[in-house]
Image (cartoon, rainbow, N blue to C red):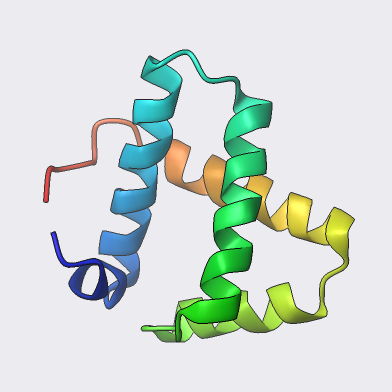
Length: 92
């Protein structure tokens, strides 16, 4: 899997993230821990990965102006967004 190809399309990116959340839940990881991991991943992405789509650019800009609590909210919302689409995920 080429992460650049996955992240270039917003729907593919959401599907990829949704698979990761679904996998974590199947492993018994709590939603709170998943959100904390999403926040850590969001920081790494914001610091080191250029946005590949307009949607990711918006997320990066929001992330850059957010305080710690707001970043937690963004991470929580992203995990919720990608979890709202059960059955729509396909393997890459």
